[in-house]
Image 1 (cartoon, one colour):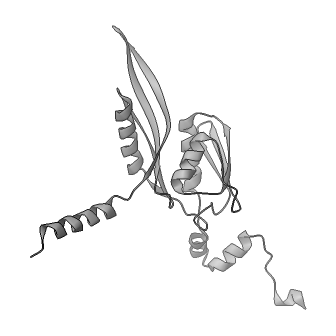
Image 2 (cartoon, helix red, strand yellow):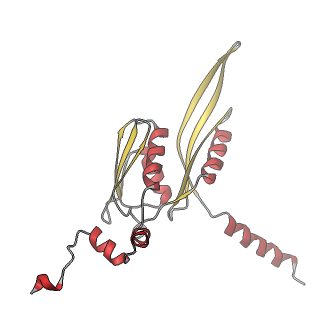
Image 3 (spheres, helix red, strand yellow):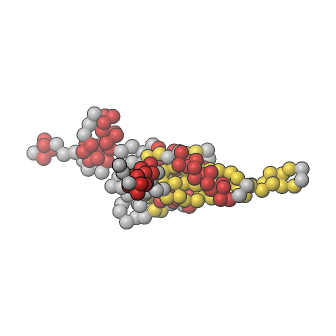
Length: 192
């Protein structure tokens, strides 16, 4: 028969596996007012981004009478809306991508090692949560945080890894990657 301490350790291990540790980034808080007969009722809206730093990220928004409650609601929604983003070498995007939501458009480019995250506020929070270390991004049009985060997610959903593309096209990953790097394919007949 197992000791009670061993059962606790086993259950603790299961809980750790079920709920991985997420980074939480607060993108913005808005104070909203509803005008009623007696005056104004204040509430707060929060926009949160959560990610594990290894390619999984989600965002959510929540409204409540108090700021901590709004943040909690936004975090719960973000954890429900997590997507997986394939990363090249675990540090940058596989290819350039555009995202659009409403009037907000974003353009994201992969970058060489050491570049860092060159992006505006809401987009920076998303990249930090995903675990991207090198990227160049530009927001065009709306600077509304909700639009920028939505547009960034639309772009990230469209990123495809070379393995995925190779399997769809019945090719080898090496063929896809060599074309991506801009290296011309050398034939034996060209050298002669």
